[in-house]
Length: 393
Image (cartoon, rainbow, N blue to C red; front, side, top):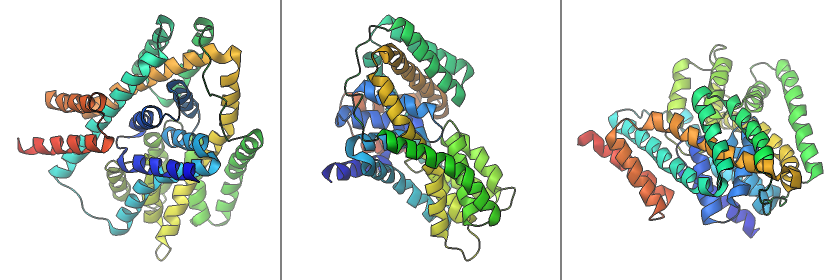
């Protein structure tokens, strides 16, 4: 019980302070779970990230779920998901219900400050992971190759490709890599994994049939959001066009309402998939309980990702414990460093750093993280305050 409570409270803190999108979230997780808590080694954390990058769904939420499972069993995983997800989901649901008008230069400056938080957090994560996961020329080369491929070609499927290529290169170049300590530790067994995989496939096949019987009803919303979570690689930004095409042309939402929710989603911490709580509530028919529609949209967009992560974890665990796979896993770890490095440049850097003042703010925030061990909330306050001050000076 104590571990479950610890998993929930730790994730809740992350859910309240993790601004900047999925790549930034992985930086927050590395700082919290690896450096502060010591729940995972850098190698184990990298493997978790790599697995979630290979799966459809929101990678940061899947990683947080699996870390919670590792810490406190399946209940711990669900509590970790709830802690990380509920703060932003409740905020976006409240926006759908009350629709506050939050505009103006001060709000724009605050949003820009949150982007600078992401620059500092992701830089700190790459800075900490690179020496541990790329300790030799071979793995440094794999990381640089992954970085170059992503900067040149980009895309969610290229992330999968560089992980696969990293594994192939590692199997050839890193055969003497040390085994990953503790990689076999997990609470998800083979039977539970098969059950999760079967549930994933069954819902994918069954929900469209149920939705066809009641078009426009709650089951149709459940089907729409489940398919979005099940079939999209690359996280929240990639799923947005699919959700827009499913909700706006049929008349469930206007374009203005959709974009308003997306704008507010940028201003709250936690996973971008929690935009589903806003979309579900806003799409509820007149007189329908908005809370129920929001809860259905939220649950069904995350459910496929959690099921497929639970199904894949034991196979990944077996692979990580196999002596012949150690070189491949070393290559995957290095490729993950390249993935984070590429994301640090695009989209994190290119969307946040507009000039020398932004670079200075991000550099000070990184210094506060690295040297002063400042908590993430202090970095959020500093960056937002600095961006807001830029309006007046």
